[in-house]
Image (cartoon, rainbow, N blue to C red; front, side, top):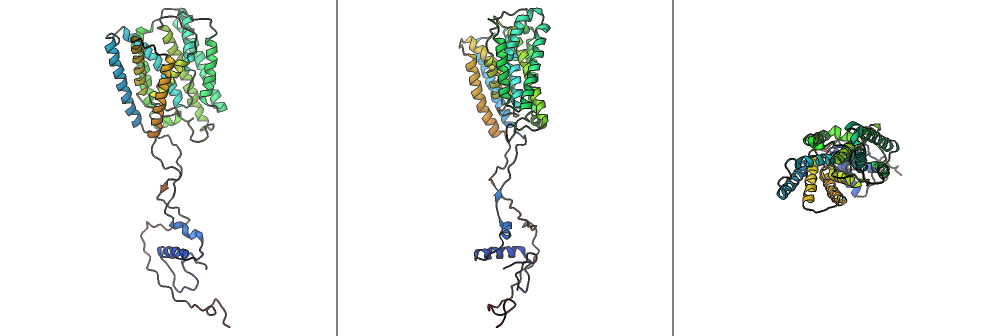
Length: 411
């Protein structure tokens, strides 16, 4: 039996149905009674459907970062109180100057780690670069600060640029490319037969407040700029919601290269500061413990291991807390290995990353989740519009004889 969809009537009806709601009720009734109908007529009465998948758009909740940063500030204050109780002069000059230089060196490493984490290319060569720069300064410190530091800065920048090109051209993971670079730097470091005595007499403690203030300013300013939505999304363009090997256009190469170059420069300056205030010779080891500390601190500060997300004051507070703890454990003769500290920071940082990712994203509808919008099925009538239709007229009775009317011939 066919229906005329424009007037909602069946052949033989004397009057037409002009009420869509009544027509739909009749369609449902006929369907339950066993009448064969066009299945497309039932589409407009569907109540629920699956919501569309929402792609990651870069929006973040900064409240979780601010709340965690308050906890980091409290932790730093507690460690500072314990240090003050252990040694009343630990937070006074001249001991404070050495503490600030150490904090500036650790802070620059952490800044480099946080920047590359946000860009999605964690720089695993930070520690070896810092150690190589420390050895370079130790060997050439007597030739003047510029001659000892500038060549190291140029080599570090060139190396960061080369690794950035490797990542963006070959579309390989950043951690793999920077690990290869770290191994190459370690080979360069271990070519020396033994520890190297520091040449020269430059003492950075005279500029301790300037150095730590510069780190603190970079940390807070960088976090504030990174909190701006467009900047955060630009830096985190390597974080793809789909295939990790697919990048979001050529523009993704800019933050990758910039972050790798800047992080390498930060690590170089950190290595110079470490060597300049060292009490003894610089040993040609691996430097990977400082990579672990830097990335672990960046994660603990609230920077996501998946990229893009990060806080504002977390780096400053986390670095301050660790610097105070290192001095405290020296006074207490705890003798905790740097690798053990790095591992502990990493584990704690991964927990923070999980919390940041779980709580820091705005709610979006997931695939398969029920929602109230029904599929249209091609119909243009909406139940929200006011109904101005008249009550449908009762169809005229039809004859039940098969041999009467236009459907059959009378014998």
